[in-house]
Length: 341
Image 1 (cartoon, helix red, strand yellow):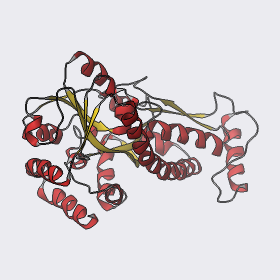
Image 2 (tube, helix red, strand yellow):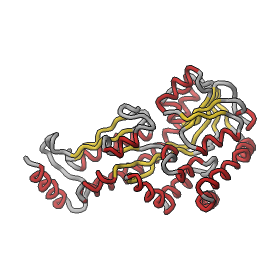
Image 3 (tube, rainbow, N blue to C red):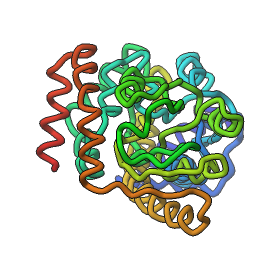
Image 4 (spheres, rainbow, N blue to C red):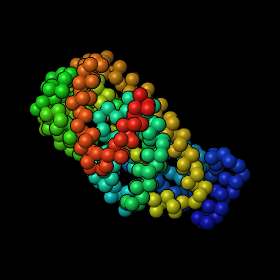
């Protein structure tokens, strides 16, 4: 069956199905005629992002009867941090889900999500992600031929290190942290008297193991699934920052798809985003319980007073970002966070 005939058949099935996104096609689609979407990411399959990418692939296959195949490549199987964006631009992959801070080299305004203690809870973060401010940020992505499809959660960040418990700002003095590429994150640790080095995510385990760095900051799901507890003695539950992911596609590729196909993909992405955010919260709690049960790390719960001291020590970071991208944008986040508190 030729591509034109297959497309006509596919569209006919869509019309017969009314508004439903599901397409039932019991005939196997020839591999040379299907649309293939390569979805690359750098974390484990059993993280919120990894599970969401797989769920998206499964639902797309089901809802298109196999006409669209999403191939998921986790754990930097195809590309590392720093390589992914060029792969997306060139069309070597069609979808990515990088952390917001990894966009900051091209779009400094995305460092807004790196601001310490910017969000009091996940509901506040979600309201910002689903609001007009992020829609503006999505529009800016088109300068690099990127199209933003959704924002997924990893969760709130915690500190781990191999030297001592971290309770007070002075406890950070002299430690060497791995960070994602972000001037805000570098400034955060400078304010605490610590050294910070950007490093690809897939290199962090070995760096912690061989002592290249003493410490890192991450969400509980990443700490657990990457086995960072094997090489870190101390975990501080600080909730000091947020990690979210931007699901991206190549704009030219997206525009090459038929409206019927893009509608199925967009509807599926919307469903998966709701599912992913709920799953991320549940996994955070479950993985923390596992870390507590295993007992490999000493876990520190900060008091409200200790949280306040750390937040006060990090307030100058806001001034740095204001100078870099403008006070108006930073003030919008401050006002939004106060409203959500």
